[in-house]
Length: 203
Image (tube, rainbow, N blue to C red; front, side, top):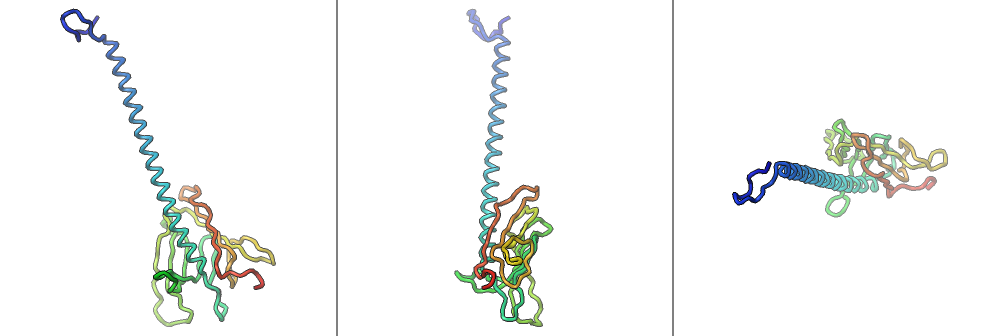
């Protein structure tokens, strides 16, 4: 049976089967098109997320390097100014100000309960004062950090080894920082920083 899509002059129109085939083909093309759009959107989102991660990493790495490189050695009284374990690190350093390093600060680094890599700092006073303790300033260096691991390269029984804690009066030769995402995946490459005032054993 022919559908009367032609003129009355006897020209044939499309059959019902042909119309169904064309409809199915158009439906498949539409599905393929929307799937392609979805893949493209996901790819764009992933690229944006990667770019955001890289920008955050660069900012955090730069801040960590500036502070750890300028870590201070003990003064004449011999009090240790640099100490840390696998999860936290504390030391005395200098904050950049107006193109230089004009403010000596006491620094603390670690991951808080909100899964943020946090930098806390306040002015460092070498003399014991009766003044009210200063409330630390706090900055977020990275978010969604499941774990941070600090390790320290220095001398143990005459040999240079990596250590999980640092309690020596001097500075370690190297500090290594590793971070993982909340989901357990590696977040960034390991960061290696050498304190500028670190001296080999015996010096």
